[in-house]
Length: 428
Image 1 (cartoon, rainbow, N blue to C red):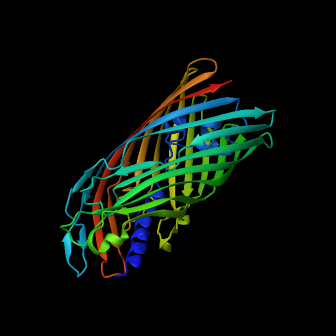
Image 2 (cartoon, rainbow, N blue to C red):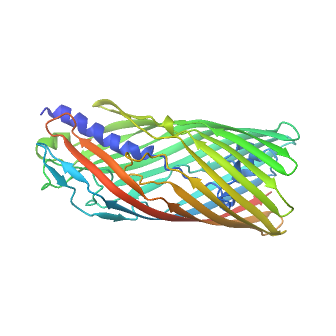
Image 3 (cartoon, rainbow, N blue to C red):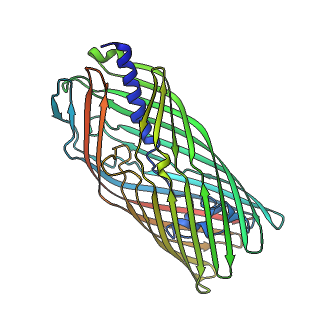
């Protein structure tokens, strides 16, 4: 078996498996504490810098205000083996040995965000916001049944948005924004050697990069009604880094290496429509629908010294919906509640262990307290109920060579989560 061919196949497979975690679509919507309290219903139609992620027009009528928030995301999950196997050269198929259940593979995390709005005269405003829209970490033990699919998957993003907004008429506001997004990732996968009696090898991808996008939106205000619509562009991501393959022995030893590599993919566009109706002096009703263009994630392109590989993906577009209420108990305290349905873009029959996701319901409650003439305290909490889902993924190692090994991952996923958030808004 030519070592050069095996080397190329091993490196391409390692980067390809790692890249799936970059673009698996674990969208983090915790961008506003006030918004979480009503399950993000009506955010596209609300005002102030706390709503900038959903609509750049939200600051057109805002006073000079700064918002800062922090969200603790707590996930209780279990990923169990459901008959995974490994097929070695010669056709021998054996069960995947090792830890049969992984508890809490989705790691808890903290998501901060910041936004500021500054009016320029009576009609214009500028805004700056920092968000973390695609952040997650999953970790499995080296002996876990899912190791040939994933060991560690860490993705961190920071999105910096510069926004301009204007009051076009007495009732219409417009806004546009440009985004610079930094992505940093580390992903590892176990590699089977040519016998179940041998220890595994491992591949690792580390990379980072800056990418750019845009957003545009509008709000209309008619008496007790506020309507909002926005569009956030898809974003092409290009990550540069290194690929490390080690621990392979025997005929596979020539595939151990450390070399430069890159991966490119596209994250989805997001279209949002929201509404707020002030039903009484105290009660406001909210609703929102979002469409996510996950079909933009149609392929992963990988480049190494071994060449280029294009891996087709089958993510699906999704639509989420939310309803919520705000109730002004008095001049100093507003209460909120809401519910949201948010389906996963990962299709049944092709879900991997890197992001063991499922459809979810989010139930939320929150409050805002007026601490002083210029300061408001926001608090919110949410419970996330994940539908049970399945993992079905066949990872082919050293494909097209006499050393080909196929790891068929079959698993069950159960999970639930909670979000605890606190934030401050201050006019100045």
